[in-house]
Length: 396
Image (cartoon, rainbow, N blue to C red; front, side):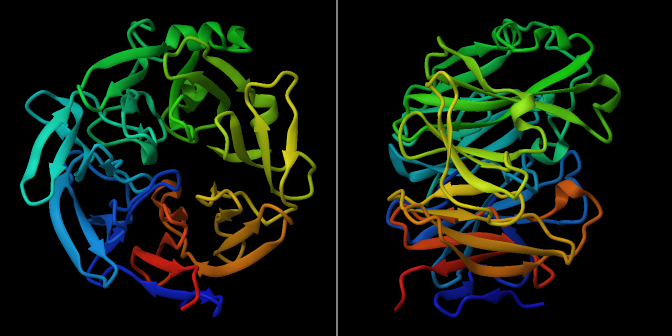
């Protein structure tokens, strides 16, 4: 089934038809510095979670659709790929997560175009700061949602970290490779708004994102009953933020504000603004922002309902918001463009998504802006294979 795309915009499939291609998450930039190459993964299959030892390709695609395979990795998943990202201080290099079999652990490798793998960081990378100077890492083996972790990061049997003072959110200096634990699990649990609820709960963190001026980081702290750790996970979510030093880590949105009301979060246009997709009115999901440093908590609606739960992200100039959706009752996903000034919502396209064997192997659109705001890329399976599609928002 072909997607129904607004004729107002140029639209084309970027990747070949010989396999399953995708990039991954919506909160990161897949482009190189001159916007001529887009990072891409080629998955061996899309019907089940990756198996231990199963490899996927990492490569580049240009604007003409020429794909260049470069390297393979064992650390990948269908939702977030292998966290492949270009390094700002080394524009001919990108990093990607991989499994170091000889050491039995995850690392982040550095790939230099024209040379191959030229180095590594000692922890896997989760997100890179916009200034390109530092990254954050976390323990993938604690994440029970295996669609957001790696097969070789075997799920921990410990419901709490064995040493909560030695595990948590790590900062990596991308120039020196220095690693520092900035927020421990002990700190997170001590500052948890319902700390009494933690005994007997499996705890983990994920979805770490760094703000626009590279000074702060947000992440989700989650917990679920031990009996739900492996199947039918029903978790509770707490949104934390902190400076890059970790000295002011705090829960800024608790489960009572999150559950069934919010689906996704991302930093906004200013250092303390957070954008969430929220249905706090009961009338449908809207684009909502709040200042994470302000007390009392006050939220502001930027748009009326745009449909179902969405991944949302501001345009580089802050005037627009891209929002996708999960498949509806007809198995259709939508991509919309929200105008921040007016709240107007424009439908960019409708994509059919056939049901998949497991929810965490689904293909979300995960819309991503190019740094100049000209291009948007999404991942879609509407033609039966995963592929990357490009929307050119500037009319020819």
